[in-house]
Image (cartoon, rainbow, N blue to C red; front, top):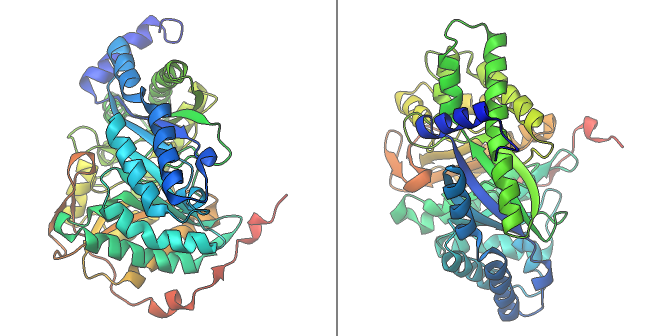
Length: 453
């Protein structure tokens, strides 16, 4: 460790870990399943189980060893796999594969496994159409499987047929787990411009351009950034940005250390460090608190989008200085249920879905972990997805939607998801109908600036 971090940096890191919630949020092993493809559902599922368990059998143990050696908490151990829409196309055994993935995840002791995914930004094959139909059942009957769809990209535009389908899938997944506040929908995310090296759930999948076995690490430290800003209460915004950048640099160095060591011990390739300020429900681990430390009376107030843009940009600049392989979704996340400050602002009415949508134009992902009334129509959810995809497509950035319709609950009630997923106040959503727009289907063309070679 002394070769990578100086003595003063080590002491600062110890302080960040002990007092300010710095942790490695996840060590995620990406595994290619392309060599598991057969025309038999049973054989494909068996090969998938064998590949995951053999490749990641030591993931949890190695993460524990690294955590003990360096004193750095590693909160989650996860696996991502080749999109199952591809892996299961020949056999059609998508649900069999989902159950194999869930069994493998349980047997190796990881927290989640991602990649029950289809990439349908321009269109869907017949096999992918069948695959999408299985998503609600797969998520409602498994414990650790996470799912995603990529329905848009800057180069392809927006597949509105897939957007329409996604709204219905979310409703069905939530209904099938209505006795658990729609938890299946919390394991499903809809993307524009999805990245292939994302270590975070529910959207992680192992891209087809990746190596056979890759380690991607996600680092988080909202509490560290807030503490650094508390030391400059009268600093101007240039000083604020510089402080965030320097703090992000230190955090990223810790992540790279862990990522390289994990890759070495697991005989895997080192992929990327994702420096995302990913909050938790714990007090002192909130992105909203950082924004308020910058100067907002409450997150959601005028100025929130500007403050978030500065935070996101400074985090990325600091991370890129620290590592040549920063990737994933590096920046700041704004999930409602996973951030104590966001929960507080949403419950008070200071933060609305419309304001969150504006914030997504400058943050790392999008509308994340937002509970809405259970009677929200599917086409309304689809229209929210379309709006978010439009932001991503027009701006050449990743955006996503993870909405959870909570059956039997309405605005002001609270949904309980447990663990890192936390709790979420059910938020008001615009009830004006977008039915005609969503019913049209077809494709929204790529923007003119996508035509570059």
